[in-house]
Image (cartoon, rainbow, N blue to C red; front, top):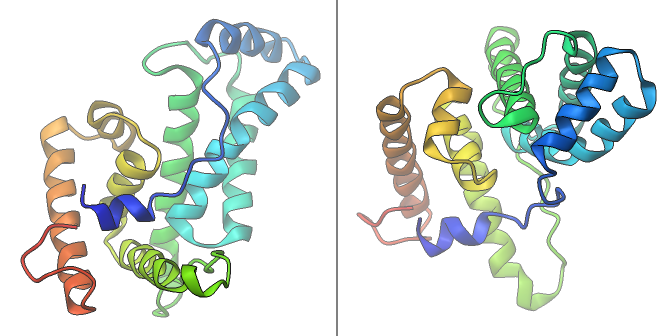
Length: 204
C-alpha cells in the first residue's frame, strides 16, 4: 500500500476485538431473549459496523440503517448462529457488507447521480489543508470504484481483515479477491495520478 493510500486510512475507532468466547456467551443469552446481553453486543460491535457502512456508503443515515439491519438480524438469528470462521465480528461484517452492496445496487436503479463524497472532517488549520485534500481525494476515488472493488478495498485496508476473510465476506475465492484488489488499486492509481497526487505509473 502506498504512503498516500496508507495516509487516508483513518485510525479505526472501534475497540479491540473481544474474546470470541465472550461473544459466544452473550449470543447464547441473546438466544434466550436476554436484552442486557443484546445491548452489550450492540455497544461492542456498533462502531465497527457503522465505520464499515460509512466507508462503503458515505452517507450517515444509510450507515445507521445498516447498523439497525445488522443488529436486527443478530437478534432474530441468535438461536441459529454458530461460532464459526472469524466469530461474531466477521459474521456482522459480512451482513453489513452485503447490506451496503444491496444499497449501492439500489442507488444505481434509482438515480444516476454520483455517490456523495464523505465530508472532510480534518481540522481547518493551514498545516492540515494539504493532507485533508489528499485524504478527501483518496476517499472520493474509493467511492467512485465499482461496488465490489470498493468493498474489497474497505475490508482489507480500512477494516484490516485478511484477504481470506475479505474473500469469505464477499463470497469469493482468495484469487478472485486478489484480482479485485489489483483492479481497484490500478483504478485508484489512474484517478490519483490524474489529479497530480501520485506520479503516473505509481501504485496507489
